[in-house]
Length: 140
Image 1 (cartoon, helix red, strand yellow):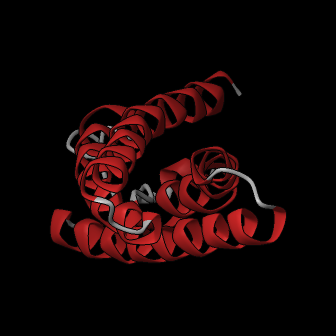
Image 2 (cartoon, one colour):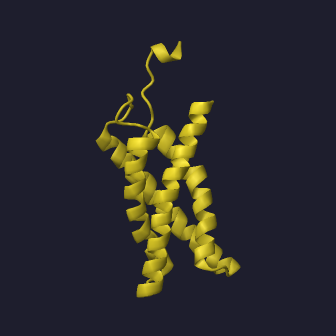
């Protein structure tokens, strides 16, 4: 139980670091260069994802140390697929909330990020991207 809570906490810390980077880049690009926020979400999402992958691989899930089901290249491919879908969810969700509820995109984005991070990203990273290899001895 403690290990699960620790992994969840580390994953949220990693997501926060990558997410804050992503969020600040989105605001910077949108406000400085007047690029639509949905496109700025893509740019920020890519940079935030690189940071998040590195932290998750080396610290959150310790995938360099423990036996994992996927090789590093497979982890990266799966992570990229999760990120692409995450960016689509974040940009479309932010757009919908901003448009229909007339809420500032910066606030809409925070709400969408929270939902996508916990429900989508964490579960897929833990159970698909960085899935631990199950040994026969572990199941006994």
